[in-house]
Image 1 (cartoon, one colour):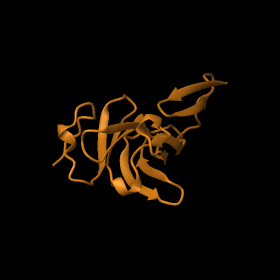
Image 2: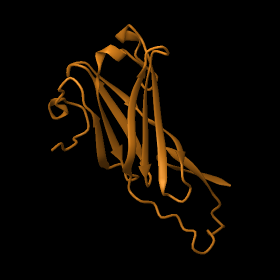
Image 3: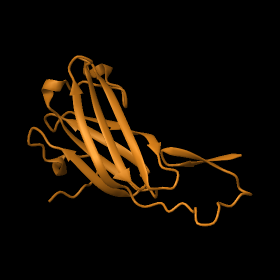
Length: 154
């Protein structure tokens, strides 16, 4: 058995075995179905959940409360439909009081009270930006911040 890495998920593939008739994988681009951002004061954590129809190649998130200090965190794939019809992502960040302890994908210096704006950039399986989701706060204009995905906002 050979494992093929498809972006954020792995699928078992036997190169000598063909899929049964009518069961081909029809991978569609990652259309956002649902996205949530929540802060848990008791657990001192931020959580992002994202569901897409189709498959995404990568999901990145940028976080800021003021537009000057910006954190970048990948959002990991949690599950996917083997037929290519859907994928779920999850990011949980613990809150640290010291920005020097921020760790990509696991810890943030942005407290619940900071009320950050968060930009999610969703790539397709070719690695091209496909869609963006913004959790707006603080009046942040993401188009003026260098180093983030070039999302178009209307």
